[in-house]
Amino acid sequence: MSLITIVLVFMIAIVVTVFISHLLPVKIPLPLIQIAAGAGLAAGGFQVDFDPHIFLLLFIPPLLFLDGWRIPKDAFFSDLKPILSLAIGLVLVTIIGIGWFIHWLIPAVTVAAGFALAAILSPTDPVAVSAMTANSPLPSRMAHILEGESLLNDASGLVAFNFAIAAVLTGTFSPGEAVTKFFLMAFGGILSGLVVVWVTGKCNNFLVKRTREEPAIQILISLLIPFAAYILAEAFHVSGILAAVAAGIAMHYEQLSGPRLPATRMKSSAVWNMLQTTLNGMIFLMLGEQLPRMLLTLPDVAQQAGASSPWYLLLYAVVITLALGVMRFIWVWLSITLTVFRQKRRGKVTTARPRFTAMAVMALAGVKGSVTLAGILTLPVVLDDGSPFPGRELLIFLSMAVILLSLIVAAVGLPFMTRSLGEDLPHDAGSGNIGAALTEAAINRLSDLLSQPVDDPDEQALRADAGNMLLETYQRRLHYNYSDEQTDVGLELMKRTRLEKFMQREAIIAQRNELFRMRKARTISDTEFHQTLRAIDLKEESLH
Image 1 (cartoon, one colour):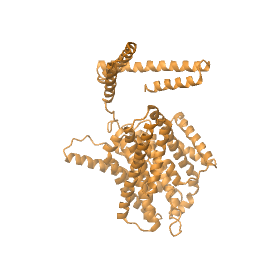
Image 2: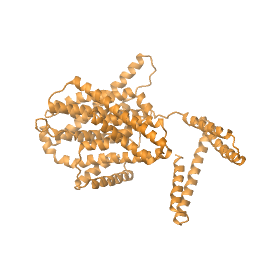
Image 3: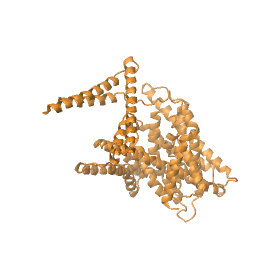
Image 4: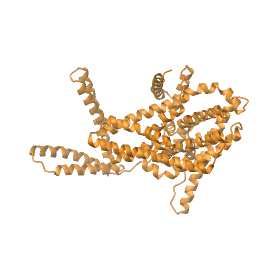
């Protein structure tokens, strides 16, 4: 089957599954629907043989770049300690603890292979978590910690996985050398991402100042940056995953140095949203597409594991999934307990510690996804001496089974448990002063413009009329921003603002309907129609 056909079928499947998720009377998370769709395609004879290294290059860098770009930077750096605790500390403990546990549970899996499986099961997937909690979102701080953890543990898990595979291939392992190499790969990856963004930003700003800004070209540059960072890092044998993450985080600060046109920002957001939906959908479709073939190999895999029945394999996957959840829960509990203890010793006032529900949600949110799938499929087929890699099919089966089980458990448990999290970790309401600050800036600028002398009296009168109308609007907004919503004045202003937006939206709808009527009657040209329609759409979008 040609590559074009595969891509088109997957894109159609993504569109269909999204509509199905909206039409179903029972809310089923989109990833599970897409996995089922992928399995249905495979059962119908649709097969995809993909190179996992190409998969890592095409899918993972842009997704991690976008996560790094969009994650709130102040939240990321303020919660860096708990993020590093989960992304490095928990990963290390999981590799050692779960690795030995897998070897004890399934003696056919060597210790090094057990470490490799535990390492690749360490990365988490925040996209899957957000899909599971679409109807009852996680509190903001918890969501930010989980996003930050996923950004970093993808790199730490993959690096540790490669070390474990090298130990299986060579039969030797040096902890000191591994730690040194890990930090070198991490530093090199971060540096690669920063260099790519810095060089790209300098060149881009230099050229834009001497020519002009083209939104399409700016979007294309942003699409190329994660691939450039990943390829540069891999060329120097450092972490391409961390390079993509660092490039995404740095992209935020690069944009602050040179603001782009509004059209560039709006179009870029739409393009990246489309790309994120497409890539995530393809990942889950490919996971589902692997399921029928995986089921056909169960007898051989059971023989590799030394199990008398294929059902034991499912039992092994369930036990490993439970062990990962318990390990994660214990780590979260210990981290919170130690944090509260340290704060009390320093005499700081602490809030009530989160209840069992909050810690259970953090444990359930350790959903496995795309990085685990791509990483486990890169397992070598043979060792350096030419003998088969021990238990390769068994490790792949266990990884895929744990991915599915973690998704199912999260799909059932997270929506139910997140409903009671409001008291534990309240949603971040943000700063209440931003609206007032922006409105004051607008008023000051308008006042400056009105105070500037103009030679033409007619123009002076028109400027005063237009400026005073705008000033009245902004002053009313400023009054609303400084009013307490619980007072009579605040409630009245809030109601007036809602009514103004409602009436503006109704007027815009009437304008759009009349525009379509005029185009159907051929009283305006196609060019006029599209230009006016875009202006109306932008005006309506500004009301949200």
